Image (cartoon, rainbow, N blue to C red; front, side):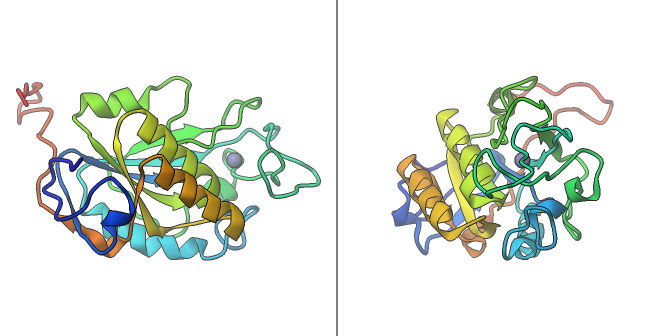
Length: 233
Ligand SMILES: [Zn+2]
């Protein structure tokens, strides 16, 4: 199914997207997952090429009218932390601890002023890879109420937080794209499996140069007097 953005030749089927372009519009959101210092080289959980996603993401933001930026935001005693980490699910070195330099956004990451910020993983007892956290805010409902139909995902890391965000976006009924050159993974084997899993769930894998801008933007929520505007669409 194609969204309302006027896609030229791209379907949600996956492999068929190769080479085609997709035009972003009023019903799209860019989700930037965990582009934080600790996931970039030199960080506690730095992944190869982590810094490379920053300019790609910065180049995408102007093609969207809605943005969600997620961050890992752990307490110092988070359940995923291990003193002897194996760099796998459930056994990570301490990372993205609230208020530390490692939890800060990666240097150079630009963020639109009215981007939505999602902090996750702040319950000491709970691992939360997904940018659709289960507590406090129903992000999927929040986006649906704003007429969002398609979610474009970029960030770190492919095999954990990007994957879980993409799968949750699919489950929530959105058409989902993952922007391959704006994503890096922890390890090659888990990253390859993550892409297979995402494709099987219906995610379309694309590259940033396949994303064009239709120029359509979400309708204003308020008029010039600050009064809510009602839309029929
Ligand atoms: Zn984490």
